[in-house]
Amino acid sequence: MNDIAGNVSRRAFVKTGVALGGGILASGMPLSQAIWAAEGKVLKARSAGELSTLDPGFYNLDFEVDVMGCLYSKLTHFKPGSEWGWELDAAEKIEQVDPTHIRFHLKKGIKFTGGYGELTAKDVKFSFERVIKHNSPVKINWGSFDHVEIEDDYTGVIVLKSPFVPLWMISLPFAVGHIVSEEAVMNATKDGGTFGLKPPAFSGPYVLTDWKPNQYTLLTRNPDWSGPKPGFDEIRIVPIVDAKAAERAYQAGDIDYTGIASDSLATFKNSPPADTEIEVRPSLNCRWIGMNMDHPKLKDVNVRKAIQWAINVPQIVDAAFAGQAAVSTGLIPPGIVGYRNKTLVPPEGDVETAKRFLEKAGVSDLKLTIDCVNDSVNTTIAQTVQAQLSQIGISLEINSQDSASFWTIGIESEGERWKEVQLISNSLASLPDPAYPTGWYVRAQIGIWNWERFSSERYDQLAAEAVTIDDPNVRAKLYQEMQDLMEESGCYRFTTRGIVPIVYRTTKMQAAIRPDGYPLYVDFKAV
Image (cartoon, rainbow, N blue to C red; front, side, top):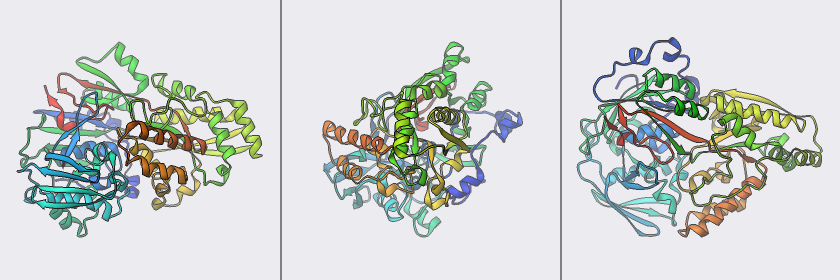
């Protein structure tokens, strides 16, 4: 493995940056010349950012999980297609014995690279328990998980402290469900903690052959893989933050699979590149304008409500998404348990109502800041909100920054910047269970991912109860109330979840995509 870095913290990630704009693309040299000459069955794809870790127990971003799915095995994994579902992966069989016990039996013959032997129940136990033992920031994905009991080399029982319904659509098929080698990780880390960007062993169809920050990630076939042969000899992933730059790279032939900007969709449909399939998937993601309720300028709920009512959401959607996306009603999208039909504050807001809330707060000539990623969508959102708030006498300064810097602003362990956060153009990549998007806003997440520092005892009670309930109708009412509580706090003005337009070259691949548009690279087939 060449140029694979060691453990990388979020702070180190900030220093490396994620944009390709100053690198190969900016140089004018085609990627195909600067990095590789295409040969064999090669999948060339774009990711929306740079890797910060390849440790599934400590993942940060969804596009990292896309890569992890190629490198490690899980008991189950998501099915590609337009409907959400999972299928067996490393497990030959898995069943819910009772509300707090799930028994699994592993397939035989799954090998770890580096001479670390066969994947066994002991590795499953180690992989799942280390997330809790080392207090991973994403341990919330495991809910009430307690431990794994080993019955024999291939059989084990996942034991929960209390029922955790989301285990089937969050814990097992997504990031924290990946299985790593206990021996390899202990050799590499000594205590079983995170190994960052230096995986010590692989058990999936591919291995990490090369990684150059801000340039590419190269995966090649795993010679020890005994499962179904993957579709490509190599997968080459290029980090391109800006969707417009990704479109140019696709049109130049440097990549064959990418998401595109919403406002480019009509152009691509009217005049598609040759041999190109265009797919539009409904997004599970959510965007909102967040407000830090602990900041002195925003402590008064009347100020926060004034901002909510001053923001006209349809104007934001028209400006930032060319009218291609729908207005959002909360964290949970249509089709998922807990979806709300409407928001408490009407999407268009009302300037006069907003002014009355400011008068009630006794505030005038208010000056605020909004933090956002410096891409075209978030910048446009911030500029639109800036104009809207000026109508009620609020001056808004835009603090745009690269994504690596932005994604640390509310994290207390990353320094003191969280104290200065006021407004945020925020977003969340989600999964098809309501526990995932709502789980980040309990009080225990304040200073981690709850950047609005939203605090509600009732919300926490509902969150704890909802994950134990099987009945979707009963569950839905709890999650709807949770979203009401978020909005009533004044900390959130939900805007849109956008759409996921994707283009790929039909002469190169049959793409395999999750219902929300994320790629499942191991299921891609070469043409």
